[in-house]
Image (cartoon, rainbow, N blue to C red; front, side):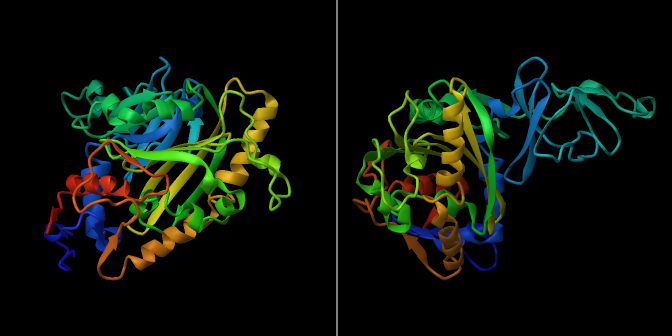
Length: 395
């Protein structure tokens, strides 16, 4: 239990490996430490797909933790991620979600940067301090990496090599984005959950057929599938759906048809630590970018894609399926938001949360770790990674 004096160093993690202290979901001091050690620490964060910023000069804004970042498609074809902050007086440079421009201009004092982040010039430079050099004031560039068109970045020089970070998830991510990542953006749905970011990220397979009415109605709980955890606390959930029959509860069952000729219908979910999701559910290609707003709020952007080779009919099908099936108000995921809030509310009571299904012993779980498709035990690997990153001791 976290001491009420606000000293996070006094938090002692439960000695039982299947327990998590409820305090970590709602304490402001814990949240501030998370920003420092996880979001600004040695972790990679998914920020965009290349198709969202397809042309030179295209940009997209996002946040890592609460730090604003700017993802820019440079004139040289390279995608870079910068701190969205002028190197003069720290003014936020861009506020719109996406746009295009040949240059990046600070609105405060009109310092001007090119799309590679270099300072081009600033008004009144002759009166600047002696020894001022433009090359010393380029935008701060983050470590950036790309896989199948998905752009990741980190603030930390100590983050693991990117290939090591993705590890065993790589072939599943590639499968989820059509094999080669040649996508085109369809659009977004954006939602704010009244919940701590860890409650949102703590989703598992146990609840699916129990919480979601559509899972029961469509009998998806009887499909073949498996989950496994990786050494970097990522989770892969792979369920073979098969061709679904016409179910009476749906007025039009075509919304759950699998029409992509290159892929047997699956529910493929790759959850990357700390807070990113790559999903291919039936024909929905979906990247979910999640951002902690406070200890009590998490914002999630659902981005939907088609493959570049899709014909017009398949594109329309992906749009219709994505908006009806998968989003924050989709009929297979509608209940999640309410439960996230109820978890957060319930976490204000004393004690620990306990994991049971799939827990086979009292000790730590080794990785890679295979789970039954309806187990929750794999989340304990994520929690152990979190505990070590935060420096909390078991007691």
